[in-house]
Image (cartoon, rainbow, N blue to C red; front, side):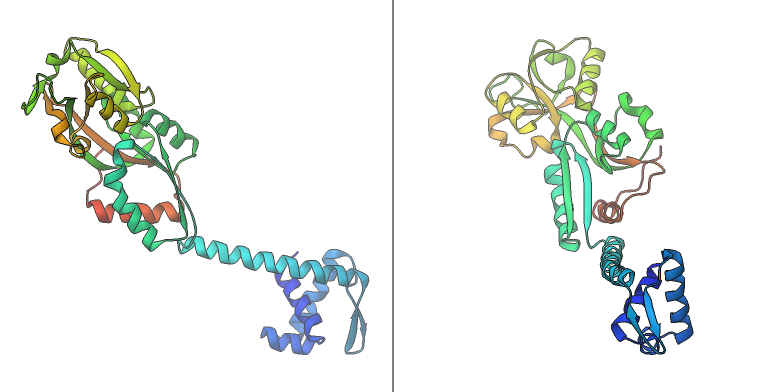
Length: 302
């Protein structure tokens, strides 16, 4: 059933004339008559009882007129919604975020909302391991992932761009033996109790692997997925942790000992990832353009 035929039929009934309907539709009268006849043929029913130049609706015509108006309204509404999507007027942006990215990405989200206020931001805070699975399943369009040897094999699946890079630092209580130090060797921490991240975080295994290379397995006193809470536990003496300098710099330095990890130096390199060969939504394309505009970074060579 052609939506145009329904439009022509409704216009003919509204105008009570094929000729007037043709003028309104900017068509010829034979074109309108032919489309209405084709509609009747496709339905196998007579919609109009013709009496010369006059006509009345049949019972079938009454039903088709009512439903045709509903269908035309739905079609027009769908067209507007699709146009809105193409113009990024509405929709949703689904992204998985590392807890450490809030402050850094907040200005981009603020500008995005200012430009596209009808786009709903659906932001999910989770570790890199969960984000990778959600990207694979299509639950998310974007996700932030720590670039490390443990995830090197995933870059054949995902496009990516670098977001942030920051050295990992020791975060310890203020009165720790490292107070006033600018750097520490990882091996110095082997007798300490560590506060770790939960198993959904790629950083979890990254630090475990680094400790193994330094010759020890860390003793873990607690775990959390919330970096603010981890910092609070450190401040209260529950243990030490390793966090990106970018995050440590948001803390009150008078309450902590903060020193960059050396031998080996550990860099926290966060990537924005999305599936290869997957068409991004209009909302996602707009965010990616804005992120590149804000961050001004070239794509990595994979």
